[in-house]
Length: 344
Image: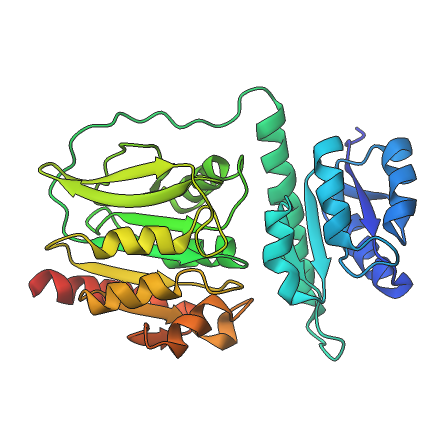
């Protein structure tokens, strides 16, 4: 029985790295290389002729750079695109331009190509799955009644950008129903956040939702900011609820981490643990400082485990971080501080 494989177009001007990418693609179950292009101009002909179902795109290309090409590509060919480049500083730009994922190339001196192979293979599978869900006519919309919440025992707010879609599941792996609700603002484009929430639910066995305006925040549940809409958290007599509205970019982004963090800092008598994950730029730094000044316990991801040590560095430099930790230690620290703050 012949298995139909997903066709992948590789756009990279390095013949050597194109060969490496092709080996990874062809060795990943369900995928095969249908074509290669060394420039954006050459890729246009390949798109028309080969009709790929996934594109792996470098940023540093002759002529039109990868980010500019991506902005022109997505409206005409709504394909999942994985940006794979050594230019790590382009992660945020790539995701904002519509890339389904960002995978950094290993350093030239690196010998750990197995880790790179695993990361790229996982990104390929996730990207195609997202595309299939969106295109099959039943785009994921998780229905949930907006009802009064149970009494909260605090709140966990999390923000991040490049690398955070993979970091967040690691934080939530040990998340339990008795823990405070989580509100997270990750820089993601529209159309992906609902699917990402479902991925968290399915992979981790937790209750994760795309945030909706007026949605109640319940213990043991996670809400994810919608793409292109700010998420803010407020409280009333029944507990915490979400405010989800489109608006101008704040700190360069929508959704903005600062928008979420600033709103949380105004909550009264709510113990808060705030986490700023990997990402490019400064979004979240000022909001994290305001949270710390309001009595929240604030955590920043350290440089060694950050894909892009931009946002957490900005926060650390202005004194917004109570404790800076590697990713693998943050989940335990959250649990420790939740217990401490709930007793205070």
